[in-house]
Amino acid sequence: MSDPLSQRPTRIRVDLGAIGHNLDAIRAHTGRPVMGIVKANAYGHGLVPVARHLEARGVEQLGVAFVEEGIALRRAGIRVPILVMGGIFGRQAPEFIAHELEITVSSIDKLRQVEAAAEQLGRPATVHLKIDTGMERIGVHSYSAAPFIEAALASRWCRIKGIYSHLACADDPGHPMTARQLERFLEACAHFERLGAPMPLRHLANSGGVLHFPETWLDLVRPGIALYGVLPDPASRPALPLRPALALHSRVVYFKVVRAGASVSYGASWHAATDTRVVTIPIGYGDGWPRALSSRGEVLVRGIRRPIVGRICMDQFMVDLGPQGTAYNEDEVVLIGTQGGESIRVEAVAKAAGTIPYEILTGLNERIPREYTGGEPAMAG
Ligand SMILES: *Cc1c(COP(=O)(O)O)cnc(C)c1O
Image 1: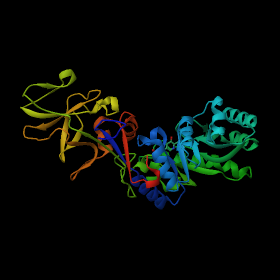
Image 2 (image 1 turned 90 degrees about the horizontal axis):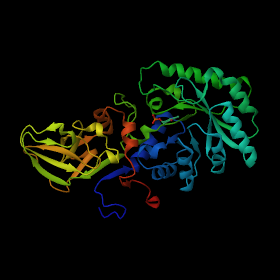
Image 3 (image 1 turned 90 degrees about the vertical axis):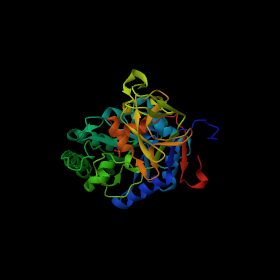
């Protein structure tokens, strides 16, 4: 609480050692080079510190969604190759090339725009061709891949480093969609052979692919959520040991006795059945702690699971300790993580909020200070 950046008792604690461990576990499991996905503030863990740690641990490549995320990494001195996976606007192409960011080319039109920018700068662009095998998001349909690949091969200014697609259902180990997508993807890749051109890096596997579908690993894997020690689907049984990297802590800021029948918080939606002890925790939906947890989630206080009661407010929420429960001002409260022998995983928080862990993690915003442990001492911060 002496952090000069903030007087808040609320903290995200990121264990960089856990992220390094997960990287090693994914490498050992797949035997493939890894593109560590650090988009959306590294899934809430902090873009630059996570990227620095992954670089120090020898990750082959990083992946982000938007050009500004890639530029932020370059400005922070990150040197490893970075692929920007989102769709690009033609006018952004010079920014990519100037910052040595690899470009996702997802149509012949965009290929032409990148080519024109590269020619004008007199510097080649490094591109990955995006094939749509079933997401119907960005990318050229696999059944239209031939002219796309021919155009890319004919380009004088685009260096084709990779070809990739994205899996829609890989979080479900039994889903038939994944095999279909793999087949379509390999058919598209086969045009390189047909044309006698060298095969670029073929990549397809997100975390679900890494965990459940070895045939999708190909030449490079692209795990995001698994790097952070979180499962893409709570039902999946991981074939490798992953350690959650993020904990979310706060402290009790107020204690009161609520009389039987009194209501707690906005909307008076929760009523005390008996006289009970209620504490207030100073974090709310304005920090990204979802309002959907109103009267649904749990937190750890003094090593015991306690229910959230009433609506989550913007900056605070209330927890029922029961008629006999105790807690004192400044007692640590764990929202995600471990306390005593108990732990609350982000997967459980997501379930209570009716969403997926991705949304909980990426929603935790900049209002919450982040603390890092387990990094190399030379790279503090
Ligand atoms: C986000 C993303 C990933 C990583 O997905 P996870 O499910 O977090 O592993 C991989 N590839 C692409 C194209 C993505 O957008």
